[in-house]
Image (cartoon, rainbow, N blue to C red; front, side, top):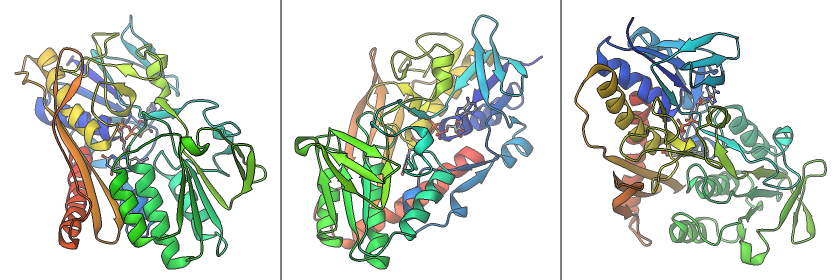
Length: 393
Ligand code: FAD
């Protein structure tokens, strides 16, 4: 039969590569996409949902067109094993699928015991809301139910993690919600990092839009020493316990479990060749997106989508003899600070022998005028429409 490519994970990396393989090979490849969810809820723009700028429904995307218009075999299941010698994947249902090439784009899982007192068993009390879907809804419901003048706490993650500006965009959107609905609320940001993405832009924006509402406790002030107590809704910073009303714990991260099960990780992440996204551990396995250790690209949906196109081109070259073009990658991360106040950071990338290296970068500046910030926000709306169409058709 035709050569088969099995893709594990239908997110920014996986849905994109499945669609490009099917579309560009014009029927020459058998493309199988394994994803447990019927609807993919994007993490991108989930902060805007928290801020009241997007509906929950607008974040959801179905795999229907990938199956009906692109002929992809979408299998609603969960990959639980990879036999690299036999070149096969085992699914939770017990089915085994053989492959010529395997693509893993499973996103992230959390490092156990990264935040003392927190485990995934506590995520219904102290949500992470760092995977798409119900966790985002839970955090929104907790914010909406918070008493007047209550305290919202976030424990931010250490590097590297998915979406470097994500926690800070979330703080902005939570602050916007409270400014409108709960103006005496307090926000406590406990951060194990000295500095973070677009920091000057966020701090400027918080001073302008949410003066006095947000307190950041960085590592120099004890932010690195933290414990949470889900049973009593307390956080403990430097030995001092404080009761909070909502606690958003975003723990340290690692590649989605299946990458370690497949044996393609080195520590927390999966190393890949920078010119192809091919795993350094197996010449028949590609890894995309957040799960990878590739160099300078941030873990973002934009990055995963960009990497997927390079890998699709490489796989088609290997399996159908089509032309393989030199790899080029790009990324932009937009963040909304307040209504019509959008900022961005981005770069283009090329492979070197060692890594995917940043070539040219740009970032919004402090003090930009309102018209430019509004245009930047509007650009992000166009980006969201574009990437979701690129993923799901
Ligand atoms: P995902 O998109 O997470 O996809 C992984 C998929 O794999 C999931 O659907 C999962 O169900 C599936 N899966 C996992 N394990 C298995 C298995 N064993 N078998 C089968 N399926 C499996 N990025 C941007 O570019 N712009 C933004 O504005 C932005 N904002 C963000 C805001 C927040 C709050 C967060 C949390 C993230 C944001 N991101 C943003 C980051 C972006 O969501 C991720 O970087 C991106 O989704 C990574 O793509 P991926 O393919 O690696 O993983």
